[in-house]
Every structure is written in structure tokens, then in C-alpha cells.
Image 1: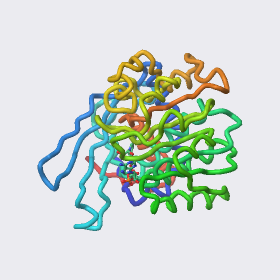
Image 2: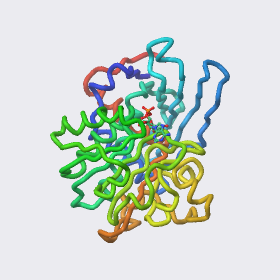
Image 3: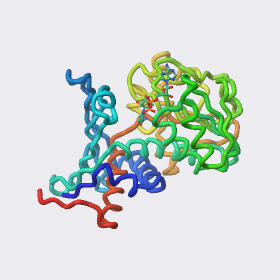
Image 4: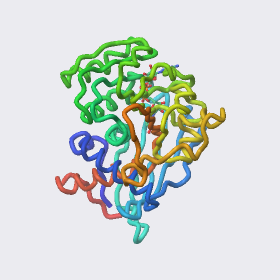
Amino acid sequence: MLIVPEREIADLMTRQAAFDAVEKVFAAMASDDAYNFPVVREAIGHEDALYGFKGGFDRGGLTLGLKAGGYWPNNLEKRGLINHQSTVFLFDPDTGKPSAMVGGNLLTALRTAAASSVSIKHLGRADAKVIGMIGAGHQAAFQLRAALEQRVYEKVVGWNYHPEMLPNIEKVANEAGIPFEAVELDGMTEADVIISITSAFAPSLLANHVSPGTHVACMGTDTRGKQEVEAALLAEAMVFTDEVAQSISIGEAQHAVAQGLIEASDVAQLGAVINGTNPGRTSDEQITLFDGTGVGLQDLAVAASVVDLAVQKGIAIKVDF
Ligand code: NAD
């Protein structure tokens, strides 16, 4: 069995490798070559922690495994550790023997950012010039850094519920040499691409904040009750997701479906656009919306990719198990 510790991931994994892994596995999911197992998430009654598993099997890539982990809210204050903790375990699909154990913390941010980037590549207008960010927390910086590689942007506009956090994303724009402007939510009408990555339980982005032709990637809503955008926006938009079952139950589409504004059949897999079985955007006037809920196969795909890189560089730790 190979071990790739968390401390090695930053030097090994690239945004491009994460993008390629996620794009490929989304395509595999849409052609039924890969599927996710039901998610387990439990409040364990200790340290207020939420712990769970996300797993799946990609028959094409022969990637089998799970990500185990969750959220320990006291970690930072009590122990100086980050609150989100996860580890990916890969298994040999021919034998069931464990093949790798991989640090999953940084990989989670990279695979989440890769998902919105894949959606921008396939659904955003080619001439997109302004990108809007809603959210300025831990994930937001990863999201913006990856998205800036997808189009030739001229400006970043940003809004956050806690405006004092906006320098987190302004810094990313500055590093890329792109001007940043803090705006009110109606300033998002200027954006051709909008990424929303917050932990909100009520909509910030309303339908009238989004101009025709915009691509919106909703990345924060991954739990029942969370909501980032007005449900009416989903009724106006062409809606895509990583996995339909998650989108309508724990993703952004849960609200529009519950309110009867759209049906499950109105939500398409992004992988089908990648595969060419769904045309995706067909005009420059359409609003497209990607509901990125986060699936286990994304974690397995980036973990398998980083194991390959670790082997190539002689960094993977081999243990007899
Ligand atoms: P964080 O705590 O670092 O940042 C939270 C962000 O939400 C900040 O911008 C904060 O200002 C904003 N926010 C907090 N309360 C708000 C409110 N009431 N209204 C509007 N905005 C509010 O969190 P993070 O690690 O950046 O994660 C952000 C979200 O992304 C979380 O909901 C997390 O569960 C989700 N997430 C999704 C995936 C996925 O695959 N889709 C993966 C990882 C994280």
C-alpha cells in the first residue's frame, strides 16, 4: 500500500491535474461508467464533530474507494489544527486490498475548485470578461485562482456577507494581475461568470442580479437547508450539476424543486455536456447554472492522480500491509 501524506500534496498536485481528473470523472458519471455510493454523515456526539464517508467506483479508471472525514469545530482553537479533516482510501478493485491512503484536506479544495472550472470551460461564454465572486472564505480563494485560468478576464468583482474578508480574494486577483472591485450584489450584473461559495442558509444572489448570458457556479450548498441563490434564478437558467440526486436533495436545486419551480428532470449532468450528449449552452443569451454539490468520485479521482504523481517523483511511502 502507498501513503501520500497531507504535507506532500501541495508540492505534488497541480490545478491542471485536478481539472483533468474531475472533468474525466464527471464524463464517466454521465456515461454510467462511474457511480457514487450513498453518503454517510453523522454527528458523532464527541467534540461536536460531523463525520462521514463519500465513496464510489469508476469502472473506466478502475478507481474504488472512499473519503472519510468531516468537520471538527474545536480543532483550530484547541489544537491549532484545521477544522475540516479528511483522508482518501483507495482499494484495488480486482482484489479489495487497500492500495493507497492519501491526505484529503488540500485535495478537497482543489477538486471543488476544479468542478466550477470545468463548468466554466463547458458552459461559460467564450468571451467572458468579468468574473464575480460571492464568498471570500477558505474555498473562495481556490475557486477564483482556478477560474481565472479558464478565460481571459479583465476584472474581478466581489461581494461577501462579511466584507472584511474580501482581501482574501482581492489578493488572488492581484496575484493574477487582474483588477478587483468590491461591489454590492447588484454589481454582479456586470459579471459574465459568477461563482458563489458561501455557507449561507438564505439566498444572497437574486435573479435580478444576474444578466443574460451569465454562467453561475453555485458551489457552497452541500447540505439540506443551505441556499446561496434565489430559487427563481434556477427557473430562468439551464441547470446542470455533478449529480442530479444530490442537486435536488442537498444542493442548490433543492429549493427550486421544493417550491415547484423546476423538476428533477430539468437538472442535467455536466458530464453529459463534456461527453457531447447534451449541447449545453446554445445561445449567448442563456443563463447557465452549475449546482456543484461535491461527490466522492471527485475525491477519488484527484487522489488517484496525486498517487501517480507521488510514484513518478518517488515520494509515495510504501508499506507492507
Ligand atoms: P468558510 O467558513 O471559510 O467561509 C464561509 C463563507 O461564507 C465566507 O465568505 C462567509 O462570509 C460566508 N457566509 C457566512 N455566513 C453567511 C451568510 N449568512 N450569508 C452569506 N454568506 C455567508 O467556508 P469555506 O470552507 O470557504 O466553505 C464555503 C462553503 O462551501 C461551505 O458551505 C462548505 O460546506 C461548502 N463546500 C462545498 C464543497 C462542494 O464540493 N460543493 C466543497 C467544500 C466546501
